[in-house]
Amino acid sequence: MTTSASAFIKLDEEWGAHNYHPLPVVISEADGASVTDVEGNRYLDFLSGYSALNFGHRHPALIRAAHEQLDRLTLTSRAFHNDQFGLFCRELAQLTGTEMVLTMNTGAEAVESAIKVARKWAYEVKGVPADRAEIIVAAGNFHGRTTTIISFSDDAVAHDNYGPYTPGFITVPFGDADALRDAITSNTAAVLMEPIQGEAGVIVPPAGFWAAARAACDDNNVLLIADEIQSGLARTGKLFALDHEGVRADLYTLGKALGGGIIPVSAVIGRESVLGVLKPGQHGSTFGGYPVACAVGRKVVELLETGEFQQRSTELGSYLHERLNELVGHGVAEVRGRGLWAGVDLDPAGKSGREVSMGLRDNGVLCKETHERTLRFAPPLVITRDEIDQAIEALVKSMG
View 1 (cartoon, rainbow, N blue to C red):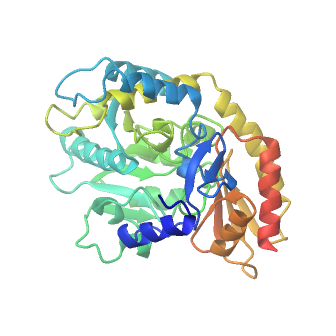
View 2: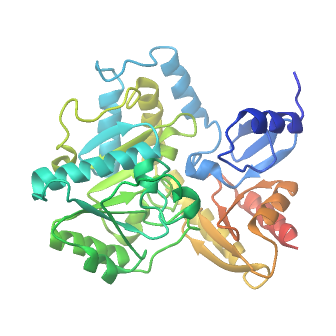
């Protein structure tokens, strides 16, 4: 069998739909914070599958949990109970301080589910007139690529030429508490936002924004839904990015890291009085909450219970941001983020994000640009200080 990178890339381009523009590297093995391509080159992974690999590649405890479950039971569908589902729901709810768990598979499914639940709650509990429910979202958002979700995206690449679009969404500037409050009407069901916007370039809202958003929701009987699919599960140094502001959401959407970098696992978690509007047959998924997903998810919960990964993200994140900020004015225009998550805006007079990403690859680090001139650094939480130093050195070389 042909093993050269160019041969695999040719196969991808010939047979795969061109909905991605990956860097020209073909990964065949991975472990911890590193990956190896088909030609034996080793790289540091500074993208982590957009936070799906918070615990690194092939974490031994997660691999073991998956293997053990695969040897016993893989799928039942929710037509029957299985011995992992209830335990997973209880353990995830207890970890997060919530009351009920709705299991799905992908992040987009979790967001779609939260939208459905919020609308149903608005009609059946709040008393919004039929088909009038509105959900307030943020400019620059990214919540997935399903038809409903891209209906409220302002990214032309994600949005254009997929209409007709789903109505019922009101967009306000991210981080503008006054605009959010002004947008609320008697028909508002929920506010749905990322605590920190990932795809937009790791955008952190002004201090106090989330407290003001929570107050506006409370004053108007509106649900607050936090999309923690990228920002959650220790990525920013706390279990949820929203925890930095001391604010609780009514619903959270989770995904990516919840599957341990092994399989897709997602969930909507929150108050029973909200998720409880769903009755049998009204929403579901064949694979949502299947035994392998629950077994892996339970082990993810166990890893998070120790606080080790939250601490690593806090301490190593501080070091990462310190090193990145040394480059401001030397090829870097601005650095944003929290924990082991950083948006790095490149100097407009320098190389493009794609060019720097290619340079990083050539210097042993895998990263990816977003919006032309921003790099996202999101290494696995098992990264070390020495590996961060290696990545910073590679970035300096790549910008030169």
